[in-house]
Amino acid sequence: MWDPEQYLRHSGPRLRPLLDLLAHVPDDLPGQLLTQTLVTSGTMTNRIDRLAKKGLVERLPDPNDRRGVLVRLTTEGRDRADSA
Image 1 (cartoon, rainbow, N blue to C red):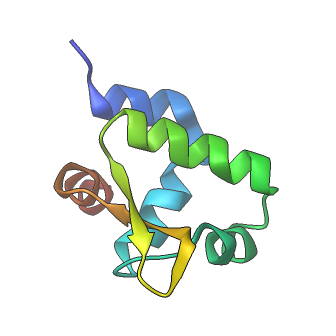
Image 2 (cartoon, rainbow, N blue to C red):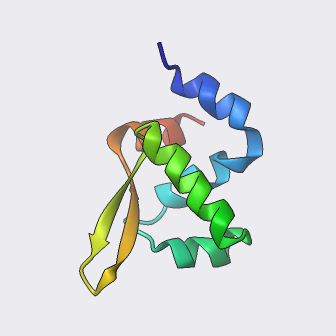
């Protein structure tokens, strides 16, 4: 069975800062997350993909840009960010 705490422990410093950042904003654009975390677009996509696969974040359509997406913590992702 998947254990989100173990997943975050093994992911170390790579995913925790992203969860913490998303816990303080309602929705964020991946491009804004890039400037706040100083990683490449490929790295950010990979991290968001990994968190989404584990059910910790979700991608939503950007109402201001048909091509864009917003990233939001799920309830489980918020619980994990708050527990740290």
